[in-house]
Length: 289
Image (tube, rainbow, N blue to C red; front, side, top):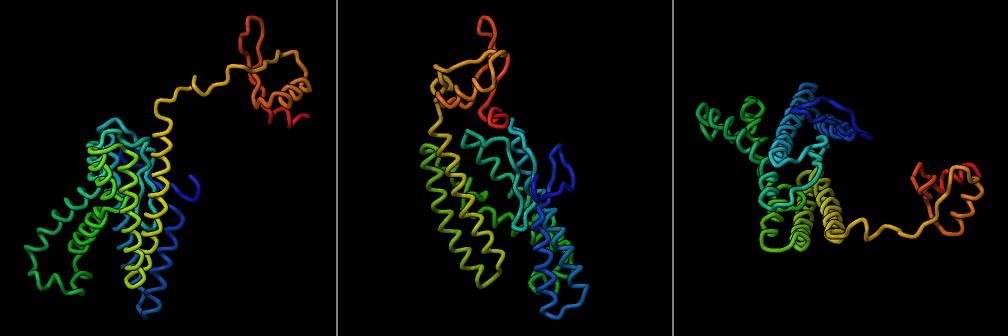
C-alpha cells in the first residue's frame, strides 16, 4: 500500500502504519518541548502513543473478527494518526449484521476498560483516581481510561464512525439503505462541525477527526448511491452487441482505421468460426502507429 509500511500480521490480517504517524510523534515532541518538559516526558508520551495504537488494533480486530463470522474478509488494517481502518471486502447487506460488526470494536474497548478498571477501583480510592498525577503513575488506570474513552468516542453517532454505522443500521431496518445512509451522513456532518469547534479549544487532533468524518461520510454515501443505482442491472443490459472484429492476419493500420471509424476502444481478434483468440486495444495501436 502507498504511504504505509507493514508492521505485522494478526489473525491472518496484515497491519499497516501510515507515514503520517510521524506527524503525531512530531506533535508530541513539539508540545513537550514548548512546555519545557524533560526527555522522560517525551518517552512517556511515546509509550502512551504505542499503547493507544495497540488498543486501536484490538478495536479494529473486533470489527474484523465479527465480520469474519458473517463470511466477510478483511483485506488489511491501517493505523492512522486519528485511529484505525479495517478494510472489509464488502459491507454487510443485513442491517443487524452491520450493527454487530460496528459495535464489535467499541465492545472490545469497553470490555478491556472494565477488565482493567475493576482492579484499579478496588486498589485505589476514587478521589485518588481523579488526581491527574495518579494517571501518570498507574499504567492499569491509564489503559482503562484509554479504552473507555476510545469505546465511548466511537459510539458517537457521527457516520462513518461506529456509532454512525449503528445508527444507519437501525434506520435501515425501517427504510431503504440509501435514505438511511443519507440521514446518518447528515447527522454525522452536524457532529463533525461540533467536534471541529471543540477541537479549536481543546485539541487540534479533533479537527482532523472532524474533517475525516465529513469527507469519509460523503464518500461512503456516494458508494451506497452507486450500488443502489446499479442494483438489478446485468452485464447484458450494458454490453455492446454490434462490434467489429479483426483476424490475426489483418494489419495494425487496418485496426487503427476501424478504431477511428467506429470508436471501438477494444477489438476482438477471431479466427474461423468466430473463435476468440485475443484482443487489441486503442492503446496498443497508438503505441505502434
